[in-house]
Amino acid sequence: MAETTLTETTVAEVMAELAALEDPKVRAVNERHGDDHGVNLGKLRALAKRLKTRPDLARGLWETEDTAARLLAILICRPKAFERDELDAMLRQAHAPKVHDWLVNYVVKKNRHAEELRVAWLADPDPAVASAGWALTTERVAKKPEGLDLAGLLDVIEAEMKDAPERLQWAMNHCLAQIGIEHAEHRARAMDIGERLEVLKDYPTPPGCTSPYAPIWITEMVRRQGG
Image (cartoon, rainbow, N blue to C red):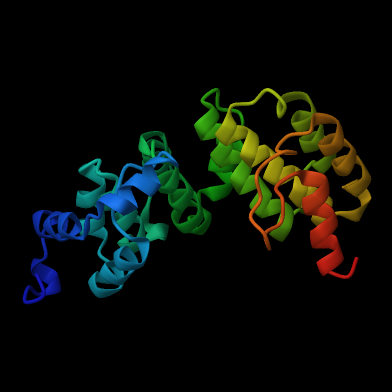
């Protein structure tokens, strides 16, 4: 493939290169997190850097339904080129957690339809889709909170987070922590909700990392910010 010009690169050629990068040990680690691929992400990013932005190739790779190919597609697509319904369909097809996460963070957040999708996804009955709505909401809590009903978000988190499915629970917990970190007027309530619900209280946290348990997370980040 190294001798092939970029304009001639085909989906089949890229799939062959991804197959050559497959590592059983990497796959074993990824599968424990629900990601069915065995390509080292550093090597995947290096391949994306060589291919550069290739919207047509990205669409072809996405259509293969292969997880590594979809991750690569996200890296070489043009995020602003997608229409709302395309992104909605892609999110519902993104079953692997890493594909779901990258699609939201690398593509949807950069797209002009992000806010419209945020509102729609928050109310979606599919917990995986709703988790994307919460991820986009967390982004707004941190960067553009104007117009958000933070007290209302805390109401929903208080009522629903404890029994939410894992991916949705994680996303709601992140939003809870972000509200507590960024907005002093809501900090005491965010801490109280975290303490009462005890979501992720016993989550195993490696040395040097901050616990995702909201009261610890909020306290540590506020401390770092000098609050």
